[in-house]
Length: 97
Image (cartoon, rainbow, N blue to C red; front, side, top):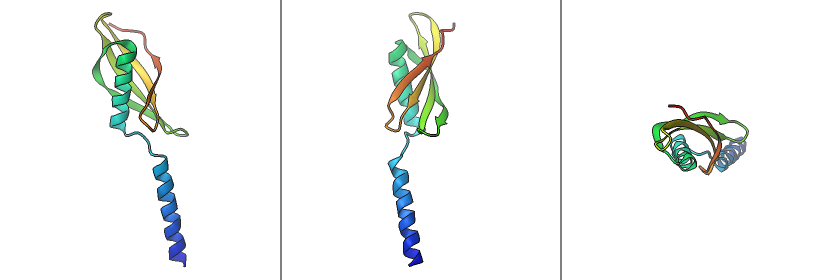
């Protein structure tokens, strides 16, 4: 009886953890880079980096590094990535030479 209760509890915990799956780091960087390129109309000069994970929402903050040839400026664009790998731009730096 004890073994059955323990097994049921374990299955319940594992199934609940799958319901709150998060976006893998590789996919989060790709989504952020794509959104940042579109946002500032530039190209990536360095691969994005996951800076931190917001614990309550499990969203990831990703920095993308973009070069805009028309302005000859480099930008850092920050995005929040949700569990479905959708990017939301939150801020960008001023352009640097």
